[in-house]
Image (cartoon, rainbow, N blue to C red):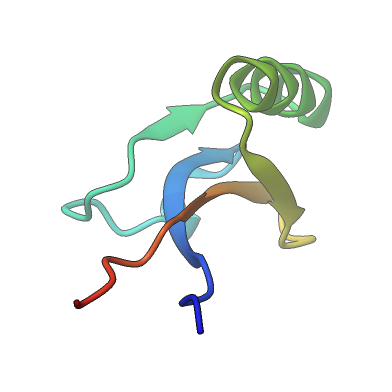
Length: 72
């Protein structure tokens, strides 16, 4: 049986820098408002084939599915 793909956080786009703790592996893009946040997220999604998840607090995260390494 094949392993399911594992989602990995790819990027964070936010309007509030205080909602994000820095030092993680995902890059953080700061936007001045929700319109710019959505525009940046849309283009990152199109370029990388990521999935956008709205956290409903001024922040969206983008994830990509990574194939799990199969043993065998």
